[in-house]
Length: 132
Image 1 (tube, rainbow, N blue to C red):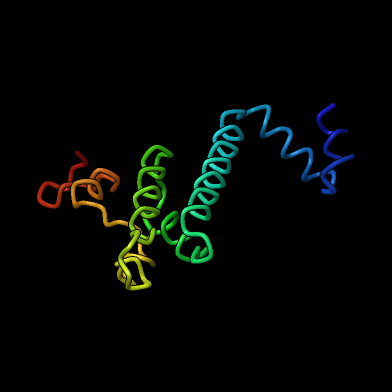
Image 2: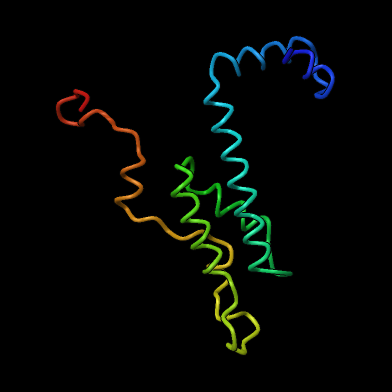
């Protein structure tokens, strides 16, 4: 039934459809995680577009989403929300730039050393050569 639906609606080759349906059956959580990530990023992009108006820069948004690498959605959400606030013009600043530096407009917020270390894969200890 799923294969017939894909054939009618997806415009993909039969083999690709069969592989995709098999993947959904064998690993349903992967498809769900992918969709939740897609919806979250679309929501954050819409929020950034509303906050920045005509000054919204999709390239800067992509940097805010991608430069930290793979993250749990809760952390990605916090990072992008902080980026949205950091580039939103301050009201009444009078400088036309909202008091925001060019760097703040184009870069996502920095992460702390501890946060980066927590995301880094564990490496074998240099002295003993044994894995921790």
